[in-house]
Length: 414
Image (tube, rainbow, N blue to C red; front, side, top):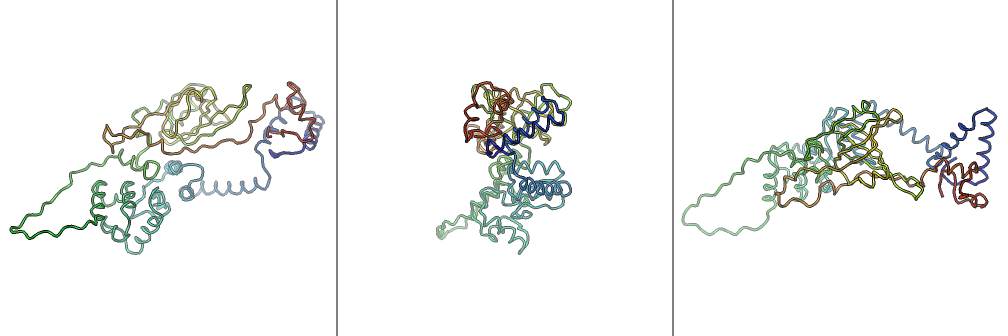
């Protein structure tokens, strides 16, 4: 049985054979009916054996690598463009496995993300707007002629454009030079200033040359994090929770959830992904959501958002949310049935003055991993009983039973 359409005759044959054999073996009707209901529901997402086998092999190989070579595996996933999740989700996983994460660095990073001992150097490929040519040329030039010792040397050796070097400056790729970002930007602008200077007139007296010095600039980790958000798409040097106005980090962490089963808790979560699931109600089809989150310690947890709650407290994009809900356990895995939630505001962006703050939240420009169940909703127990003639209620399927080409197959698909 699968979600693909089958002839009514074939379905009826399978159904009859199933019930006959169950009766011969002495199984009670309640058990027989419930098992068949579950089999019929499975038809909504089952697929052929060859696909199952190929996915099983890939799953086993991935599981083996993650178990015995975890940091190598995560590095490979990041270089494979991460798949469904954003790169920062895999970076969080690497941290949980004991890795140190370094942002892109012109003297250590390759084009792709690389692993050196237990340190993962994010690749230049992670710099969003950096040109493809520079992502490849910078490490190649370093291998041929040695490490870069200062910005001017780097500019001369790579012949990089001003735009590309500014992207690298803002994500901290020159931090080994121990020069503030602001000073690096000024040096780059001076280097690329090709305006012709007028020939000075002859002077009767020697005029002393004016010299200027830069004021001491303290490093601001919050400013660096905002630069990383724009340049990489996620913060690396600090946690996204450190960008919140509030110091509250939740009453409960993932590791404590089993102590609060059937109790209401307040948690703080950084949104990882959302899944839409259609469900059938008497007044039509509605949507519910499942959410996946990371807590302040990097632990993962899931949430369930039923339609009434979701309508009142919808998701508002990427960010950290305050979550209120009841802890439930299913198949030995705790999750939270949400009653209320709200996205929390970020601290002001220190790169702008108070009166010139951006009108948008930087998280609003980033996408959340969002999936949807595209099939029709799973049929209810009453719908299946009615569909198979065990419990005619509304006569809804009577016409389809007499029709030579049924409009609905097992699993509710049309």
